[in-house]
Length: 114
Image (cartoon, rainbow, N blue to C red; front, side):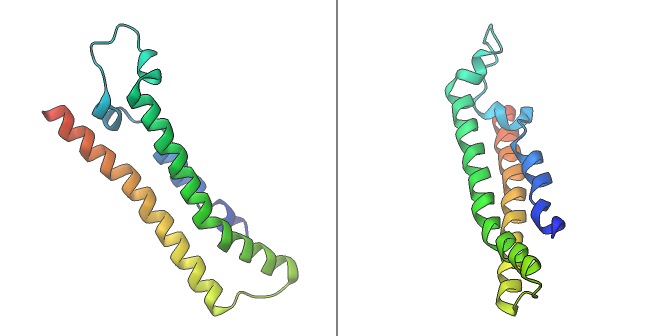
């Protein structure tokens, strides 16, 4: 049960930490105070997108994790439909995490190159 409950934690930690290249999409390199970048439009947009990403991962994983937990609690096994739901849900989460890393990196790199 623990592997299914914590499978989404490492991808979320990797994708919500602010790497410098994706943040360069809206970066202001002429700013005198680095703290201004957090309160700028780009910083606000990053925080909103990160919150939306975390919420979507929670929504995708909540149902299957609950099914696994309740099956373990009741001493039953998962049905075939629940296994399909679990696999599809976790596959979507993995794809979402990959997209959350790759797309901002490409956009930031394109912006830095001009």
